[in-house]
Each structure stands twice: as structure tokens, then as C-alpha cells.
Amino acid sequence: MNERDTLLRRLIFDLQKVSFALVELQLYLDTNEADPQVIHDFNQLSELQNNLKRRYETEFGPLLQYGYSPAEYPQGWVENPWPWEL
Amino acid sequence: MWIYEKKLQYPVRVEKCDLTLAKYLITQYGGPDGELSAALRYLNQRYSMPNRKAMALLTDIGTEEFAHLEIIATLVHKLIKGATPEQMQAAGLASHFADHEHALFYVDAEGHPWTAEYIQAKGDPIADLHEDIAAEEKARATYEALIALSDDSGVKDALRFLREREIVHSQRFSEALVLVREDKEQQKFF
Ligand SMILES: [Fe+2]
Image 1: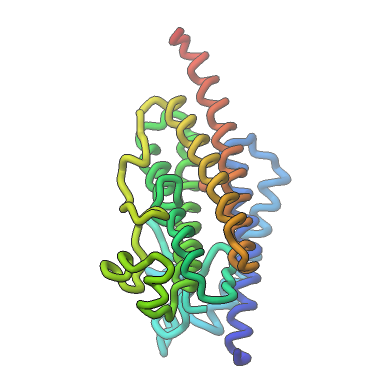
Image 2: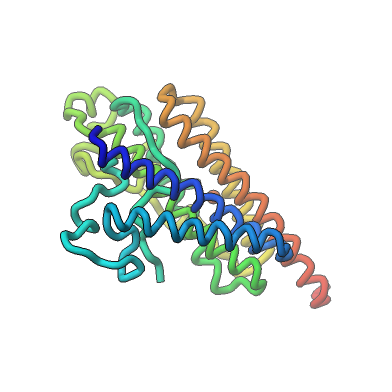
């Protein structure tokens, strides 16, 4: 595995940790009374997720399709590995 | 509207090609209690769900199930990658190879194709949430069986994550059931 692969995996892993916490909190907030502390944690993690997403996109191109990530040239969306290729 | 994110929900690691394990795992792709059934069941029940919190929950869990479907797909893909026709045959996957070669397909562990008969939509919120809780418990039980059948530490790790998610989903659906029952009591349908 070369250095870039290692970096890609690390950035994805950092994102996976934060996104997972957000999925879990989202489900919790769906059925439970909105606790201000949980909302605060959710928003803090959401900001952290945005930062990690931008960090990934700077290195490897779009994380999301349809303009939810900026496009660049050359096209990382097409060229960089899909999850099942990692 | 759905937007694809180019990452798995949980990192997947597979030690080696293992066709027998792939043959079992595919049931969580296209089997009765698998992730496709789960996603389609929950997203389809949203339209007749009268409680707003339950509606949000069906949307969010239904969406997460697609992320789980992708984890299972990645596991199976990695487990069968590069297998020869002879190896597929030895593992009891000759029929799969004849129809699909190395492609994935929505089938259970015995090769039966996915069918809408696996899922329900009664339109009654109490009946539907009971169905959803039962589905989560059946998926949890399937993951426990698959963990017992697996000796690949990477696969086991991903399966343990998926098993935990079924437990959380079951808990959240149980909370939604309490809310729906409260609605019903207030309407004095009795
Ligand atoms: Fe689930």
C-alpha cells in the first residue's frame, strides 16, 4: 500500500467514526425528547464532519455526488477508488 | 431524494477468498431478513405512518439499511473475488456462477431470489411497528448465526457491527411503538 492509499484510508476512517456518531444521535433524536446537550453534541459533530469532508475532498475529490461536493479536474469522483475497491 | 456518499458506513476487511462464507452471507443481501428487505420495508411504510417521530425514524433507519446493504455487498464481493469456476463449483456455487458469474445477486443462502413477500405494509401503525421490531430481531439472530459460521476475523468484525445496529434499531422502533400507542389512546378508538 502506498502513502496516498494510507492517507485515503485514514481520512475515510476518521469520517466513518464521526458520521457513525451522527447516525446514532439522529436515530436517538427521532424518538426521544430533544435534550439541549444532545443537540449541542450533534451540531459539534456535524461541524467536525464538515471539516473532515473538506479535508478528504481537498486530497481526493468529491465525497458526495450531484454538487454536494465541489467538482475538480482531474475527476476524483471517477478516478479514485470506490468503497468495494479499497 | 438520496445522495450517495463515496464511503462505507463501517470499514470492511476480509482476510482471504472464502466462497462458503460468501454463500451464507449473501442471505443478508437478498434473503428474507436481509438488508434489502429492511430498507424497502421501512421506506415503504413511511407514507401511511401517522406519527411524525415514527415517520422520521422510518426514513433514517431505512436509509441506514442501504449503508448496511453496501457493507454486505462489499464483504461478498471481496470473498468471491478471483475465484475460479472450479472453486465456485466446489463451494456449491456452480448455479450461481452459471447465472451470474462473479456478480452479486439478491438471493438467500440457498439461492432463492428476493421477493416482496418478505416484507409487509399493513397500513396500521401498531401492526407495522411490530413487524419492524420482529424484522430487526430476526436480522440480529441471522447475524449471530453468521458470526458463528465465520472464522475470518475481518468479516466477524463487520458482522458484529451490523448485529449491534439491529439491536439499536429494535430499541428505537420499540420507542416509536410506545408513541403510536399513546396517540391511539388519545384518539379513544376503544
Ligand atoms: Fe436494521
